[in-house]
Length: 421
Ligand code: LLP
Image 1: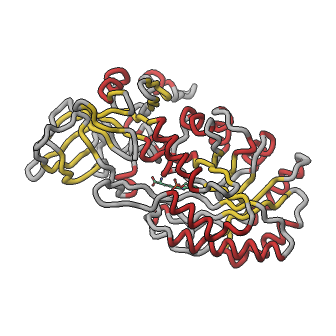
Image 2 (image 1 turned 45 degrees about the vertical axis):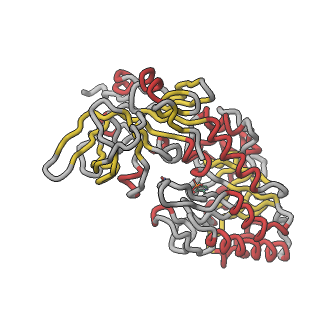
């Protein structure tokens, strides 16, 4: 459920008409609903009620400071994957002891920054990383709290580019080697083992892969405890999928996911962390765009928008589906016709949808891409020198620009011409 509904014939974000934002900000832009972000966060809180837990929002899905602050005020932790994300989380007001640091390629500089600034734990993904972190921590006179990310060799049954839990993927340590690596970690003076981490992929639409992975983690936790390790925290990753196509999909609910967690690891007495991104931010955001032209081709009609693959890359990168709706509600009984919905970028891959049934559209009309709050703005670029797409946050009847569109001058002046030219 989200808070983007038609009211008096016009699409609204909570109590604000999308058309009013478009008039104030120009198009294209992203708009997020505070109520939806909060609602989705609370669904996880309810799902894990009764277990000691921390919900660490995966900032890679939406890193805007205002979004992070909104969630942090509810008590959320944050999952970061770079120095930049760490610093943004801190700038948004998240204390270090609510930040977990994931990722296969943390540099020593990033480790130093997070250790110095305060960190809940590093999720370590390899032995070389473990040794590097030990060195950095010792050089600072500190001990780095860690989990080790294990790769459970489970098929997440999702898009190949976002599945991470099979043994051929670059992530984590094979679960069969985990005991040896934990023994190695326990011998390092700069390292403090606090738990186990797992993340098997993103946009999972079934619970069974989670169940398989978490059962393996529970077994491992028992073995490691028997080996003498103090396993007190389990980071179970993110990945619960969302319904991108309202018409035909209904992924499991956070409550059902919480039941899997309780059933598989609930008896271990561990603190549970999860790292959801998409389920919290995805359906809390729209990308809004204007039709520049309707071009009638020989075989099909093209809806040419003022947004493009640089603004929302998911369709061209993953073949992803986003529902597209007109901002003006079609009158009852209005028929549809198929359009190829495209952007102005000079490549055929700049196609959002082919033969998508929409009510008849005209130049100047506004359309909204649904489910665009996760992996939308964060993956945007300035390809074709199209200024970075702005972001807007709505709360009730208020809205604010939370990242402004750069001016052409700002964009141009970011480049520097060397003295010899
Ligand atoms: N934790 C870790 C270690 C991750 O790698 C990810 C996502 C998450 C948590 C959050 O997963 P979520 O709950 O959002 O599914 N750009 C792609 C998605 C990439 C996901 C990468 N890792 C897309 O647009 O579909």
